[in-house]
Image 1 (cartoon, rainbow, N blue to C red):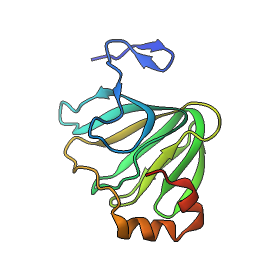
Image 2: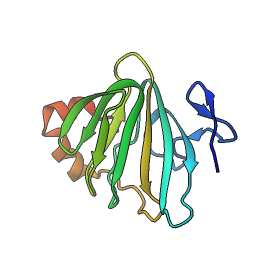
Image 3: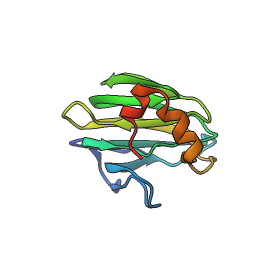
Image 4: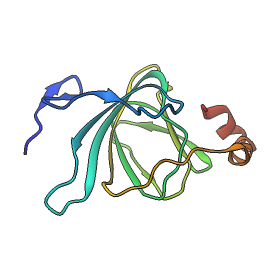
Length: 145
């Protein structure tokens, strides 16, 4: 199978979907699934695009994420650290690590993400976890919940 790029950070015959459809808190983000696992390769390869001022859900999982920024710049929270990110940066999100991506630089933030096809549901922070996250000032001013 070949997925042909159709320009504008879109691929032919690949639908653009909302980031999530589970009622979680996020803003201005879309998802395209480019590969859903096959032939003994149990990974999903996805493209996410966050519009200027948008953000992903603050969450963690038991599975690993590997992300490569291919458009724009912004910031990411991984664990207890907020980091500037831009084109060609690679972000590794270890298991059970809080993470959130934001398009904070006045432009879109687009990234490719690889995850296992066999993965758990996202965990969102409860009151205790939010209290811990908010104890770190840079994290508190970054996160959106």
